Amino acid sequence: RQFLESTKDDNHILTIGLAEYDHNIDPKLKGVGRFELVIELPKPTRTQRAALFQEYLLPVVKDESVVDYLALADQSEGYTGEDIQRVANQVKLQAMIDATTSAANPPITTPTILEVLSTSNQNSHFINNN
Image (tube, rainbow, N blue to C red):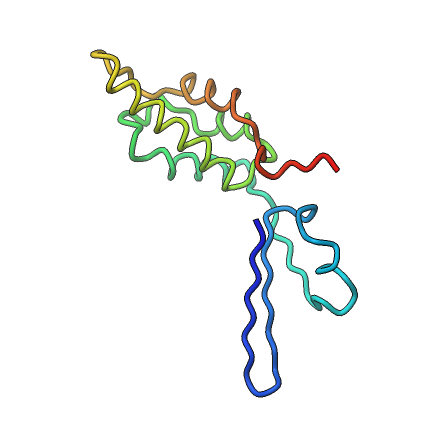
């Protein structure tokens, strides 16, 4: 995903660009003189990934004592916040499906989330084989 925004004010131009992954940026935009300052934001740390899982799963986890957020963080090393949000959305979707198809409505636990995490394709929509 790429995003460019420009503002112009009396001969001063400010252009801000944002890309989730550097390899997705058109090489012409990375030429000399295009962007004078590049700020790289690192991927979340283990603790930050655990906090992201907790935040994104809060609406569907009924009993937090059965979810080990640090274990989820350990299994998601290298994931971005967006990757974690996508996994959480898949967990939420599966919970909705389970709620409509099962009378038992099983709770969401660490193994449940790890199953979704193991089948998710990290960065799948950004991978470029070129």
